[in-house]
Image 1 (cartoon, rainbow, N blue to C red):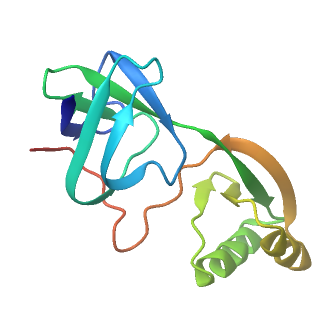
Image 2 (cartoon, rainbow, N blue to C red; image 1 turned 90 degrees about the horizontal axis):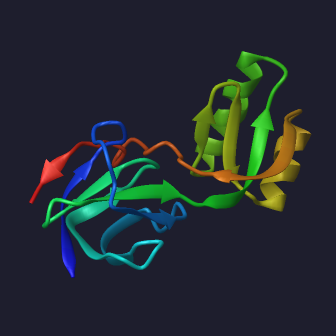
Length: 150
């Protein structure tokens, strides 16, 4: 089994030997064994603290090969608003509830939750259920993302 020697941010590396597709929870790990989508590579991710892998990150293995991280499609709510100020207000309500949120241009994405959908509609949001990749913001206390070696 290979060991992940370095996490390379998306766009900072070239060719991958294979890829691994993970949902958002599967991309937030400290220690786990990852099996590539084509079952060609098993790799141990063993970090001192939990990391949040992003779509497109590369996991450089001990032998030099790179395993690409892909974000799996998830059941989400797409939230849009009638103005930028309204979108900020909606984002505040989501943050106040400590919900993982992806900020994507003129929309917000969160995991599907019918109770939150109802609350947002009550606040005047346009809410649609979608299936897409989910890459939420890292948060104030653990969102830093940088390449490092072991």
